[in-house]
Structures are given as C-alpha cells and as structure tokens.
Image 1 (cartoon, rainbow, N blue to C red):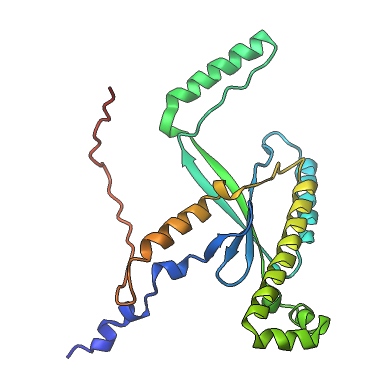
Image 2 (cartoon, one colour; image 1 turned 120 degrees about the vertical axis):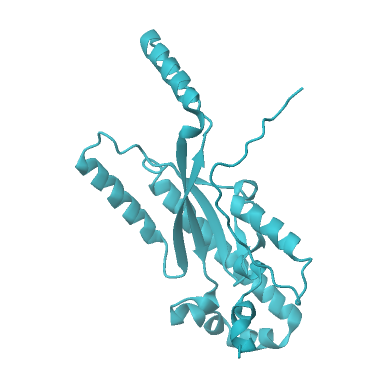
Length: 242
C-alpha cells in the first residue's frame, strides 16, 4: 500500500519560486533592498592580468584587497560571483607606433574569426548590510533601544511611528553601506578597478523583478517547479534578414 503522505511529501515541501528570490526592489540609484530587511550593492571588478607578474607583486595586491575588506564589519556580508560569457564583444587596442598598431589589428581580426570559441569571465561582488536587529553583535541590536528607550516602546505601539522608525533605520544603513563600499573601491582602485553598478545594470535586480511579476499570477493553490534539460546536437535554424 502506498502512503500518500510519502508520495506527495516532496510536493508539499517545495516552496514557491518567488520565495527563493531575496530581492525586493531598488532603494536608490545603486542599492537594492532585500526581503529580510537588508540592503545590497553590486560592484563590478576587473583585476589586472597576473601573467608574467612576480610573486611579490601578487602578494602586494592580495594584501591590499585583504586590507580593504576590513572596512566591512560584522553586519556586512560580501559574496563574489563569476559570470562566464561566450563570444564577447572585442574592442581593438590602438597604438601610436605603426608596427604595434598593425600587430594589434591582426590579432583583433584573428580573435574575431574564432567567434563563439572565445569566452570571458565577469567578476562581481555583492555587498549586503544586515539591519540592526539582525546584527550578530548584541550592541548593534540594542543600539536603537539605548538611544531612546521611551521612543522605542512608542514605536512598537504605533503604525505610523513604526514606519518612520524603519525609514530612519534604512537611511542610516544605506549611508553606512555607501561609505564602506566607496572606501573599498578607493583602496582597490589600482588593482581591482572596481565600479559600483547602477540599478539599470544590475541584472540580478531586473531578473528578480521580472520573475516576481510573472509569478504573481499563480495563487496559493499552484506549485511551480523548474527543470533544466540538456540536449546535444540541437537543430539549428538559419536566421534570415531583409
């Protein structure tokens, strides 16, 4: 006899796809708010080519990055991502010397012939600051209470007061996040060439908003699962142009 609870256990334990996306929406031109109350920034980094560099030089770069990361305290979470893209857009490098210019031009033409065989890695850092009430330090969690105990109790009882208190907390966290991130970018300017991405270029934000909007058509009675199927030797259809 088949136990129905066991049969449908995986279906019952599965969560909605929207619950797996932790992004809520943009706060300013760069920061994005998460569902757990945190704030997130995306930084694009492009390190120098380590080829033909001495070990001492690489150690110096590593020490610089390690020192720069110390600006992020216990409330911060820093993650790194590598995105691999095939057939990248190649821009030729120009030189004043005729011989170097001709060599660069020939190399660029050779790389263009390889097409999809080429790929590039894009590196990103996501910097998230947790709200004060989720900080691992007890001092941060109690900071708002010790600043004004009477106001804290008053905030807990009034909706509008609570909203103003949350807005003030977001403003403080956003200022601290930008200060720490800008300090990191300035310290690593010579080795990482970091750049703070605006919300228009944050693909994670745009994808999350699109998926969240599309998945909202499914109510609580629906269960949406995703699958990836890998097929070799696909049928390729030519693209025609006028």
